[in-house]
Length: 311
Image (cartoon, rainbow, N blue to C red; front, top):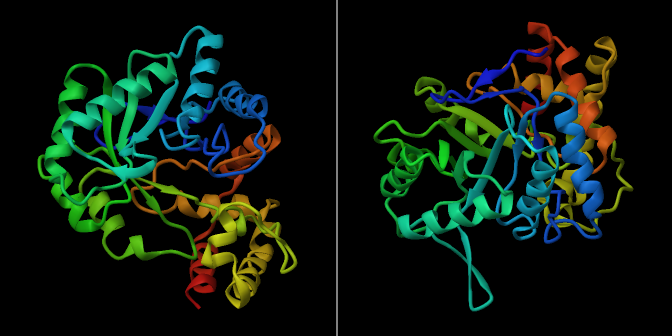
């Protein structure tokens, strides 16, 4: 059995490969999702030994949490399953607003508990910071919810270094989730060092850059989902990015692995990155992500990967 890793200062133990579930009921993110396939992604992950599921209110909205809740109910027990979800978004007159106020976070947690059909959430994140709520005040409410047993660990997502420091003023933050991949490495300047120094686990989202780092696209690939607006997938930048990914094939071949496995293995060599949450749209992709753990990169290979993407 793969060794489980503790998240931050909490006692949550997770498999290093989890499942990001924005394709489980995330109808507002991807067109034509099949909900039964989405539930099968979750079943496959849990049956394979993965125990870390990452979702959010805004995936759907709400529907991802609901589908995961249905799978949890099927299983009858959620022992050893670590559920992470996020809140901060609310709808006001048809528009999405951000709200980190204590009252709203409490309301959001209660809503997630109902949709997930559970009486506690393992890891609850503030999904995005708002502009008005003091960050330590928002986290303070999550601390109270933790004391009440409604959540077990506290996370923040998409916080800048200054926002993270304010949020962690009393040392309550266990996990930071932020965008970080080989193309987008701003987090290395200050977020990764801070999390490593303060026993905060760093969970990168979109670790495969929405599939770009999986080595499966060509310059003729077309996109009709959220990737269509992503600068990484546009014009000459897209072609340059594909050239960089192609340079990883030598490393992947020497490891008898796919490019995606090499990329995911690279993350697990970074300080404070304890677990990954790659997404999937098919059950076989869920299982394929587990092959990451068979890749043991050498120091020279790690340096080579860095040089490719810094060039």
